[in-house]
Length: 246
Image 1 (cartoon, rainbow, N blue to C red):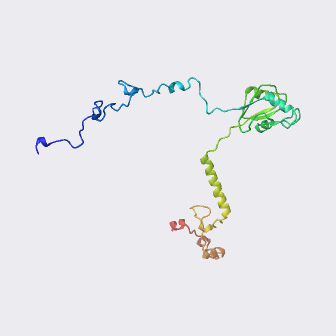
Image 2: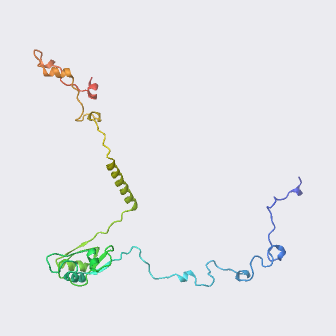
Image 3: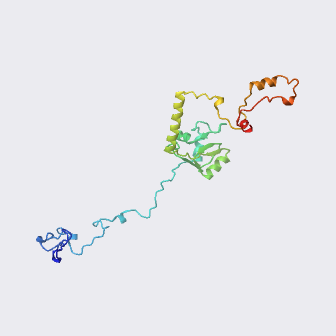
């Protein structure tokens, strides 16, 4: 091989395409820019955010108008003056001025038509006067409403918000209930455990004490002429302690 025989690998070197040099060049005539239009002209530079002349999105979106609080609680509002008027007219099932103190909650207010739904929270405001004892249970009270009800001899109760149980906790509680039901329906008796088979700990009150029959007989018979010091022991431990002492 000689120096003039060397050449690049096939396809590694290609001549650049000369655009705009006629049809024979492969990219001739319009040179890949199409026919007419803004992009076919020399010096055309269109920014990426350009929308063809329509109102741009950064102008269309609203500005300086605040925001919507997704966690805001929408209360149903009732005034104590209206509640007192309804109680006086007997709209809550108890006539006003009677000895019975009317109990007013969301269900009672819904049945009387003062709120639309008992499932939504209720707030009691202090507009109006209270002339009788009232027991009102609601989710929230204004300070003036609470003071007016208590000044008339009644009392208020603020309901605690209910905590929503998670789906995982509900599923776990349902599984435990199902297992308990299945065990009850099966009715499998518990295996009997013999007291002698139960494990015993050293020094416990239930440790077994073996008594030899000969020792029992010797203990029952009188010692006679033999001195009491030579009498055999009446009991003998059969536990680990006995083997260690021996």
